[in-house]
Image 1 (cartoon, rainbow, N blue to C red):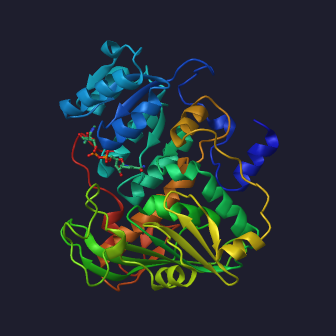
Image 2 (image 1 turned 45 degrees about the horizontal axis):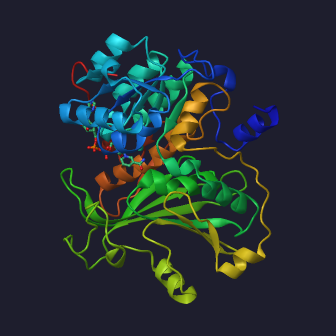
Length: 415
Ligand SMILES: NC(=O)c1ccc[n+]([C@@H]2O[C@H](COP(=O)([O-])OP(=O)(O)OC[C@H]3O[C@@H](n4cnc5c(N)ncnc54)[C@H](O)[C@@H]3O)[C@@H](O)[C@H]2O)c1
């Protein structure tokens, strides 16, 4: 790694762990495969993470459902026919996995349900095992901070799974915004169902840190652990590093007059609204009509005092609107290092040393926190502004919400 490249990475806020700190227990030389455990062998674990982990050596699988373990083994046979699957150890409880194999692992990739991200991640981190954790990093804000701090203390490599962060588009967005392509951005709106994916490009380009307040402006349904069918959430961010205060909006679910039904949601992801029934910002509809554009089902719109930029759901296709304005603006210099290969391979690359993985926890924990604060605002209720003191990790005007910042764990699961 070139020293200048490293300094640039850190200056851009994508670094965090210093190269010298990135030790972990792995002393894997560049060519030796890393010994990897997959924890959570469901859709994302087996479908996306496992094929990438097969570029290294999968040595253990953990999932309480034996059918998921079987599916994972079948997938390994398919994508890595030469792998010795008989040698892969399987566990129904990841605590046992760490007890038995804690010293034989270089990395753990975690794709359990959200409330089960932090406990196995922490067990790995404290044993010096590098961790890739699916988004959103954790279920509570306390856990996100704990993982970030412990990873730093233990010197392990980390990566959160908002895979669009490895794409070209979000780097381009940063470079355009930092070059002043649309001036000061005071409003940003994201549309879709995946907070960490969607907010990430703006979080990076606008250098967002902790918001000072968050409020649900519109919400339909959503009580007793059931998600609302429509929300509009607003975060208020103060001025930062030469940037004006900005309001970030998140539009989710179905438009105001629509009901949840087979017709209004996608067949594949039934929690995702079809485009024609989506809850969209009026500005999106206005711009689409005016410029005959289709901004797609998910993405973000950044509204500056000199123009507007769009970006797709996974940080792809950043453009100034209209196209003539995009073509007229000189292409900014490439300030940020690019990722070669996939988001997961960037993690495995970092496990061997060099610059930190691009979505390491120093970068991603505060992003996950923004998304989780949206949940806190939903718990507060409609039009109930929540004032947030990020440094103290406290809701200041509604102290009753602070109990949601930290999980209550049963015996045997305490962190
Ligand atoms: N980055 C992305 O684009 C993306 C896409 C889909 C899902 N995800 C994330 O991946 C995670 C998993 O989602 P999914 O769609 O694969 O869900 P899923 O339900 O298909 O899979 C979850 C798996 O975890 C297992 N599991 C549950 N409790 C466990 C425990 N205590 N220990 C070990 N395994 C356990 C389940 O048996 C199941 O096999 C979620 O956090 C989700 O947000 C990310």
